[in-house]
Image 1 (cartoon, helix red, strand yellow):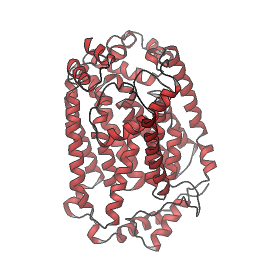
Image 2 (cartoon, helix red, strand yellow):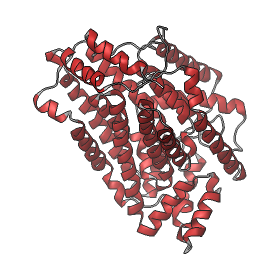
Image 3 (cartoon, one colour):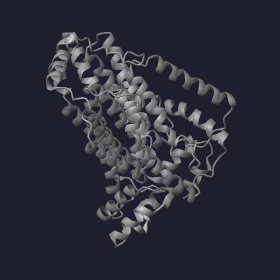
Image 4 (spheres, rainbow, N blue to C red):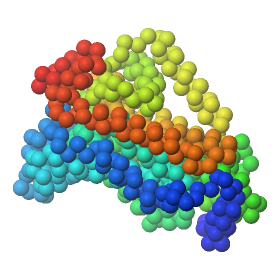
Length: 473
């Protein structure tokens, strides 16, 4: 096993990086103090609380909250042993997610039937996820501003209101919590591989799967993470070698130090795949349990394969649209009537973006961001159809992180190539986050009570019987 990079090499990197940045582009004064990671973390947490605080007074939701919490007798059993046994053996509500069940058990014992406490826990987990995302990106890349922007987009994007405001979606925020912890632990393992560190990654991943199996693609995300930002894949001088960041106008001394750090941890791609086999085994076990749970509940008896494939292709493009223009967000999206040209146009657009990303593959953040988005959506894109929805806002909670990485790093790279000072991006970045915060606050207001929510959904739906049925309830 190759030795870890020496402290001397790391010091060379930090010193050379600081010396190589032109004075005009260095943050200074008040802006420099505000760019401290701890300050950015506080701002991120306060912004998220300010936007989402109204959820504290929201009620239980008519759809699923009843089965998950309100009228679930298992959560109120006097025997904790029986409750734990039920959580690990139950396929209730077409899912096997014992960690989520135990989370609801804890909530019921603390808050009883008061929805405020249940909502508060969801919000706290969302804040924790935003801070974890910031921490993971910061430690993997060294960029505080870019990491903050990605985490801010995640924390404040209105498409995530459904996940945070819906108590039954505790499984969503909880699974991502363990996903991000495992991703952070993986970097620690990659710096100095050891069995104990690998076990930590596997255990955290297992907890995430037991919260919600949507994170089943985690081993493949790690392969992307090996490519960028960890640069663990030994491509040598191939065309896949990553280009230096535009900010890295570095001396020969730093290039030498960076090479020492990177090469010390590089492995062949085949070795990295073998390294992920235990994690892939966990993915397979989770997939089997999930298919069994959903099959027994009859949750997969919808639509022929041709319809599902066409909808999956079009849904990818619809998700991209929601990322950049988050309007008409709905709890339930009916299957649209698709024509051949709809599917063809969507497929051509996806292929064009993929070709562009591969053409610019030396910019690793584009490759990782795009394939993160495509790959993490696969379990929820509808090829294996569970339920009647064509797509769902909650499915974007993990997958949109990839798009946010593309945007956060892409805009910064363009600014760096034009030698713009970091403060130049501060105002437009703040404006974007402010706009998203206002949109999220408005979207959250529709969840203030059930009649308001379903009335809003009926107004933006095209005669969906599912929406009318829930409004009637």
